Length: 147
Ligand SMILES: [Zn+2]
Ligand SMILES: [Zn+2]
View 1: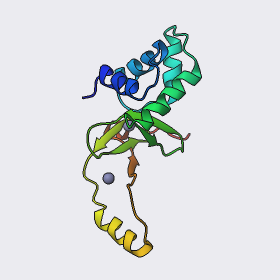
View 2 (view 1 turned 90 degrees about the vertical axis):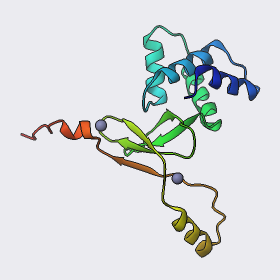
View 3 (view 1 turned 120 degrees about the horizontal axis):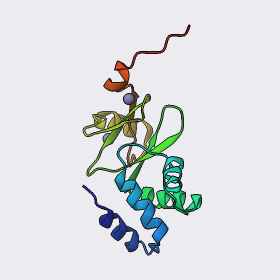
């Protein structure tokens, strides 16, 4: 598993100045479990008395996405969140109820991609695949009745 110091090392290698607020953001990200949004991260840091600026939080997240340290996850409502990326080629399953994210490996799309490439003459360089639904825990929560 990636550690805070791995991430900070990678940030330094880009030539980016690793300032205290950026370190704060990185630590907060590593302390979290599952999906988060930039807004949540910002609120939580501020809620604990941090004087961090919103722009710093969002810029740091963007850099971490560019470095492929964070994955951007699209949610069913059109918003997006972020999770720390695991090793290798992975995809995410997102619960629409609680936002819980499960990583999985093994997407069976090679044949589809080959067909698409030959039909469209695209040179395909990658893909995104995301699955969303309702996790087991959320399925157990009784639905509030309408009346
Ligand atoms: Zn859920
Ligand atoms: Zn894949």
